[in-house]
Image 1 (cartoon, rainbow, N blue to C red):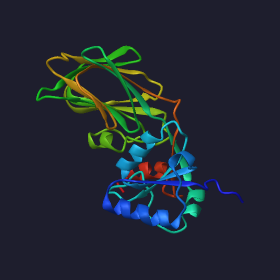
Image 2: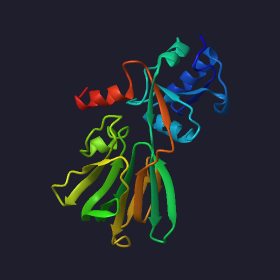
Image 3: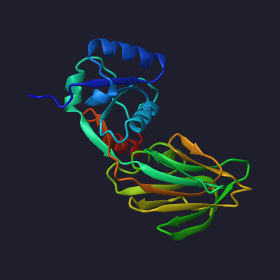
Length: 257
């Protein structure tokens, strides 16, 4: 029976453990350049997985991560043996990134995509003042907070969870809109929005209360307004061992283990 994956490209973080694993696996399995690969095997932590998803975005190449980092929520356990067999048995998780367009105070537009979340943060000691609209309808005229974020289901267990946001099942057609240390309205804990929603965030008093916008690890400072929506034109494929799919891990997270 023909295998799904014959050509592997290995990538690794700069951590010593990851670099050591890279050398070992390259010695055990044939390694090709990413352009010729059927699958990317990423060695590191969740940060490397996000970097790899961004790096190979638009290529449709699936990424199979093995944990050589700290948490490894997005990764599989590291094992050197039977890699081809594990790849054949792996289950696919398909996610779509967020598209962020941020305009700075000079009117220049900046574009970036996020797999986990788009977040906005105050840049000084003063809280940011934000106007929140969904599909061009103002929902909060003035949010005073350290910031706000929009998280995908895949990213809902990351920063979103840390600031009190709701965990979303991977296949839920939702986005989490979560404030960061809200001062007014104090009791607002965020909202769950349909994943086709178009979110607009305007920075009030942008000159006096500067705010930055961050899509995963891409930051733009001194923004005046930001638009966020899900980009369904891009499919990102992660591979996980049976019983350790991203769906299962998100479910476990909701029960605290």
